[in-house]
Length: 163
Image: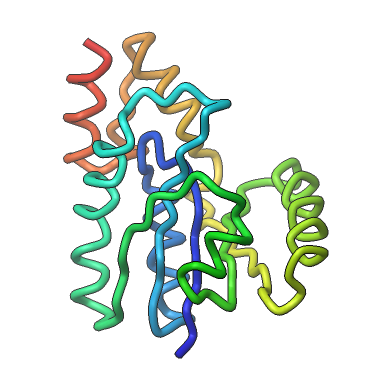
């Protein structure tokens, strides 16, 4: 069974994330969405809210593809989380060349800790490449329209949280 882990903070989950959920689900038998608890970041949404939003968005993908897609909150090392969930692959989404430099370093460190877990990079669809959760939150805080970057459900939750 091919199991992949796609980690992130998903604060909030964007159309770019959902695009990667769909692309990754076509490659594996089971997809685990690792929702990170990162004390260095100050998320707008609580862990429970982020998990709930991701679960809402993955449900139709799982139904359409017929594969198991689950969420898994984690606070430990990414490579340890991958081992916990039985993943042989870590999925990372790339938007731009600037993402690659950081991700390249992470792959090297993860391979040094466990060379049996591969990292696979998936490019977002062109229409989603500029979307970043950080920018979505900033635009929303400043009164801009973020409806083209997130689903209707996430949009409503984001506006409610910002207000």
